[in-house]
Length: 273
Image (tube, rainbow, N blue to C red; front, side, top):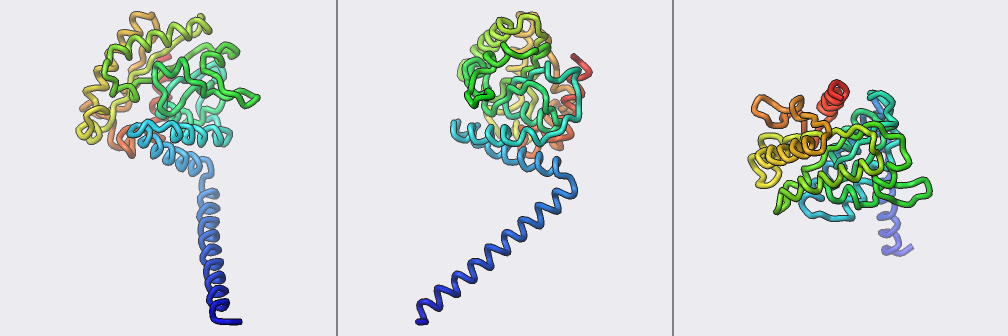
């Protein structure tokens, strides 16, 4: 065997050893975490990945990132366990963006009608085909709602619209969404949730995603609720600090709500609807 072949053989052996060590380490860590709390670890990893992807969405509006982030949730939804109940949860629908996805996952709401999607807005909620059918096709949430026994609909939208040049359009589109829901489910109760503020540090550092802007949009939501005769839920009231900012302990990125505060959020919904 010449020197060239010897060097190649040694290189391959070293590479195999390194790869084996990496695989062994990952396997050991995974098993250790799984023994401690499999659902918690799984959910935390998923939420962390989604939050990172969502930040990219806010900055780049990249459709492929949106699709990938939502795919993560769709592929792991069966790993959650129902831990809280709002009556018969199969008759309850949630419409929202990545924050609503966190609410559903952290609370293990496996059987609700989940119409949440990263980057969802009041206009795309009507038109976007993101709900998967049994045959693998995708339809709009309104098309899916027609065939479901839905008694309550909780909506939280508005964060992704904060940068709109004409904020009044937000109010118009929100009203149109409610009208469309009533066409397919005229007897269901509709609850509009206030937009949750961001943390103080996030608010002070961002010209768009700040609490002054959020307060303005929440006023629009109140007006829509009043004009359309639906319920307004001041969710933010149980999640903010004394200054009206999202508590710094509630979020790792200043926007998305962690497990403990998602549980407070759900408790508020249970107590007020």
